[in-house]
Length: 419
Image (cartoon, rainbow, N blue to C red; front, top):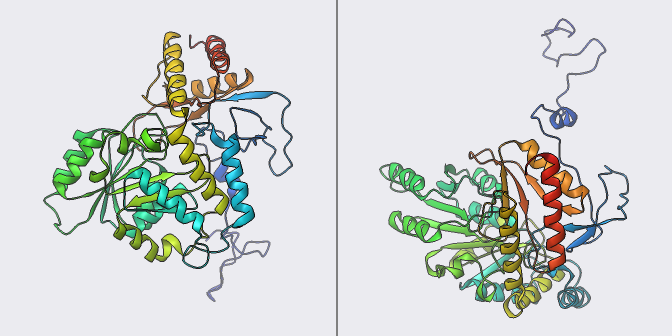
């Protein structure tokens, strides 16, 4: 006990000289400035979700004031550019008018509607599964599924979304991270574990398209390993759903529907809405509904969001948005590489790696000054990945939009000494 504290032996809590008790609260200010070398994140609101937007500088708790200049957005998951589609907006408005603006309760109470069932039927068709179940967010879908399954061990790609890590903690599962995309490393870890407890339940988890670097998981090889060891495989299609044939993801593209036990994904990326989903067989969905943590302790997805996702799936299946997105991504990748930027990934997410995080942040800021919004990301800490600048085109970006983006990259790269 310090000399400043009263050292009475009556069992009372120690007091400072000024008579106050020792603090058992928190110090958010010191946490924000804990010396990790990075500036903390701030909110910078936009006036709309589209390929062009006006942004307000961070304002804390004050009302934000947007800048007068519009900027080209190459940092959004709105891959098909559907958030401003009039038919999708009309579907959301109609659902709000007819069904209601919110679900009003959990799905297991009175928050289950025909709009939810329509969306789940369409998602089951898209994923080639028996059934689907929608959640208020993609995070909730992943956490709800893994905690309901209660696996003993989860084998997780080192670059998987934080939702997987959080779910493993909540499920009290042992988590084994294997090197990013490294099937051989996963095989070694599975083999070394195979001589242990034969009653352990194993779950292999991967994203199909990784949001951190745009790479694609080797799903066929992961299926082989899961089948060899009798494990289950969960594939998260957040950054792939809606972008492939019939609105599906990589699982559908590669013809692996029958070999993947659980598919999860987001309605908030290409499908221009809000929420997440799980798709699988009947028994899996019944288990998720029965587990109180997954469905009972959160209100259901808002009906307008469900209706918007239904219409977005229809547009993704029937219009040429996918082709336009892939043309834009390929053109940007080729032109950035021609400038001698290193560009990783093979999808709509273009990742430019940097050894020095300051270079990624510096380039991001210079691009913003030139009217282009990109996104600098730090490595997860679970892998040896570098910092990256992510560039994500939309299907709605025009040739002049792409040219303006490339001009900004050329000028900013020269100013910062990267080119």
